[in-house]
Image (cartoon, rainbow, N blue to C red; front, side, top):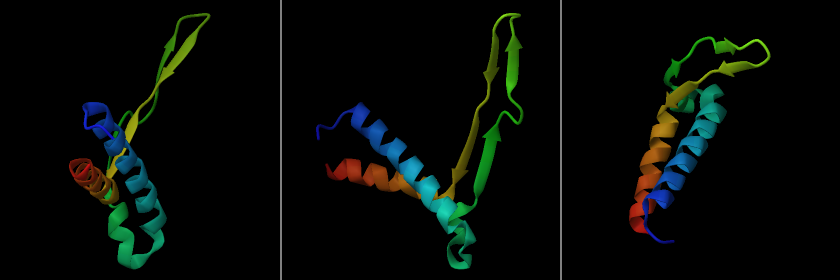
Length: 82
């Protein structure tokens, strides 16, 4: 794999998704529940734009957990090893 910004972005996104998934799975295990600890931020309720014949709904919420941070770090380490 050639080192470029796209491969780094792809690895970091994969690290975020896999880290979030692992954090969700380990949330019920007492010894690993710290992986699901994190902060959510974004829009609490979606914004609605009503144009009469067209209704558009905007919403974005981001949850950063310890597992997703570890996923990002591992993705960067993998990128450096390539």
